[in-house]
Image (cartoon, rainbow, N blue to C red; front, side, top):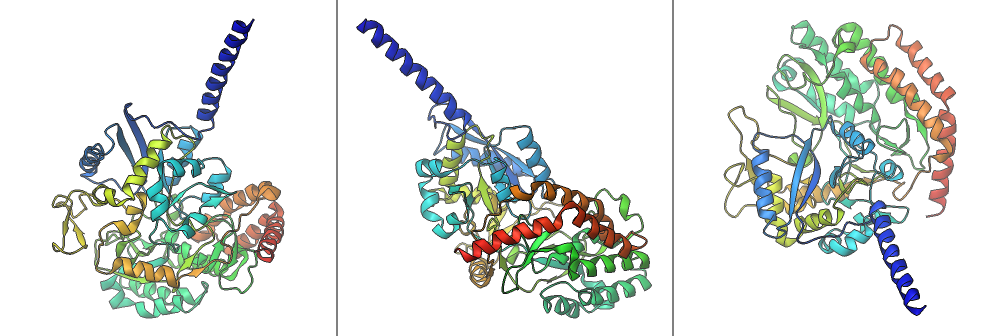
Amino acid sequence: MKKWGFALLMLTTVLFLLIGEKLLRKSDVLSAVNETEMVTLKWMVYGEKYQESDQVFTAFNELLHQTYPNISVEFEVVSKDNYQKKWNMKMANTEVVDLAWMGSEVLDFSKEVKQGSLMALDYLLNTYGQNLKQNIPEELWKKQKRDGNTYAIPVPGVLYRKNAVLTVNQDLMERYGDFDQIIEDNQSSHYTTLKCFEGMETFLKEAKDHNALGTGVSYQTLCTIADKGYEGIYGEDCPFIIRIFDREPVVYNKYSLESYRALFETMAKWYQKGYIRQDVQYLLDPTSKDGKKSGNILFVEEYGENKSVYDSKDTEYTALRGELDGYRFISWESCRNCLVIPKTARHPGEAVQVLDLLNSEEGIELYRLLANGIEKEQYIRISEDSNVIARMMDNDRNYRYSLSPVNIGNVFQNYELAEGEFDQIREYNEEALESALIGFELDTRMFAIEMARVELVVKKYKEMLCQGVAEDWEAVYQEFLQEMKEAGSNVIIREAQKQIDSFLSNP
């Protein structure tokens, strides 16, 4: 009987271990790091693929093998315009992704956490991420926590959200407009008003009178300036916001405020005057003419200190650029840039090991190779003792290679693209306004149905009003507001305000 009892105990132990291993894999807590098995990580990065990207990726793997002979990385470079769509498809289809970039201007970090798209990283970091934990400030780690768990690796660098820059043809502006006045009109107001568009309209009229209008206004990018001074309560582009300059946070439907009314009124007027092209409704890519000599005469892009956020859009003319916001702001989401391990990761342990190496003193050479390419092939040092580089171009004046360091980790480990770039970023981080809602987590369960309904209404009306094509824009605008109320916008505002008031009264 003792033998049978011992055998039964051993069988039970083996079954327990097998079930435990299955549960461990199923919960995606950790994949064991095997130092002999060959592993290929799938890394989804944000940016543009260049002529010599594959050459650099090969060189990266060769250098990585000197530290981790059994780990290789397969990079998938996804453009800014396609990143959100590609991410959503991969998560829906449970496609393997071991590492990915996430930023607040493309994906809603808190929403992805709630949807279960991301792995909790605390155990992985404690096991394989000692350099990451040591070299990234504690206050950044705190901002990546949700429900007590860490779901992202913060990227030290630019912490404030993107600002908007108006870009124009310098020659045309000098002849037909007053750029300084346009910038002053915008920066002097916390929020977008009709006055913000007056100088632009004067320029557009003169350009049209001299047959220099091109394809008109890049309406899609210009419409983003209506969000100036607002902070979304559950994502950057959500309809419900607080105004960041208010003393006490109050939740509004942003489309009911003056900024959007001024925008919709202006776009309707500009469409009637021919400043927006008449076939605007049928354009597959409204921004394709931005930066072209005979293309869109005004467009808005993201602002980056000395190209630290992302490189400015190439133009076929000498460009004049001016910042429209006049302030810098760190949002409550605090996920300007971060790195995540999706729920579909096959090798999360190895993924953290690679990131830990890249963000260490020993991994700087590997980091800089991935960010900039090979010295004297894709970039050159300005001088031997300088930390500043210049990227090399091909015959078509495109970069041979480039990858934003926000995909890799600590931006300050990279070379600078201009003298003093990193000091400037640190200074702006210190000066930036901080959201009153940092640490706040909105519980959307009470109004999830209303949120979905309101978003459907926004899809129905917003694009048409931004294009200016509605014959009676004001009547359409009133319909828009009414349908949002019927969909439950007031319910969302009321419940969100309760949560914010409770958060602020219990710091």
